[in-house]
Image (cartoon, rainbow, N blue to C red; front, side, top):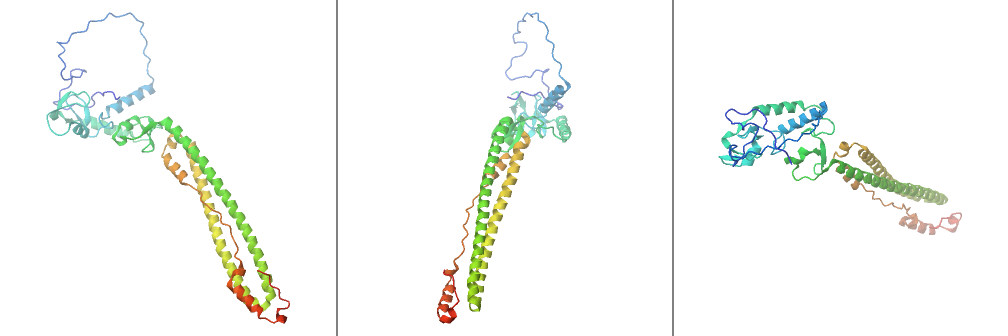
Length: 355
């Protein structure tokens, strides 16, 4: 629970101040009519020395007090257009008007509940200048582990905004309804998720490399088959001499076209697998760097990296490369019919490999 803050800044002229340091509350009897407590006897005790805070501790406490004095208790952020009311407390003008609502008359103070007339609302120029000076002083580099907006320690992680926040950020309007977790728990959770994502990516890369090996083996076997087929065709058509020269060139041309088309397809598949492996390697490197980074760097939008890792997939079905049987081409059958019309003398010495 946020403790009540003391009034800060210069009080406008004409606004009465509280009696002493004691706040007045409605329906409270006068001090004269209240019974005085019976004094208790003092017990002799050895005084305990109060430890003297170090300069660093004093500086930290002063910074916390200053942060509290410059923060509106309604929006929990720096005052915007600060105003003072009759009881001496300060609020943002917009926050106070929204809290009081429309109309005039008197309204309770959001902190001490003391009624204050609407006419007592006065701008606190001294507090506004102090806030402006503080903001200018804090425009330098933010110390590690502190909120750049409130200069408080980053103790929480906002799941909705995917970044570390301080306790003041949690209570602000910007993070209303957001899911928060202690920064240490969030760090351990996301570090574990990143390590799992790294293992998953490695498995996917192994799968892609396995398919790449299959693709290379299929391509080698197919090229060997193409080589043998070309040798066989050349031997057959060489026996036909000039008679089959045109037909031989035609078949070789078609075979070359098939080879070019299949080679192009095989090269495209190999290139896609290579690009996939390169992408997976790069993503693995990013995940490894993220998992090995500091807590604050690790929690800078880790979900985006996890989503990219989960969306990576290696969908590939190796295609068995086949060589068309040229004997099934209608032109080959036409050639055989033409050969059947040759004389026995012309056929002598010709030997055509059966299809």
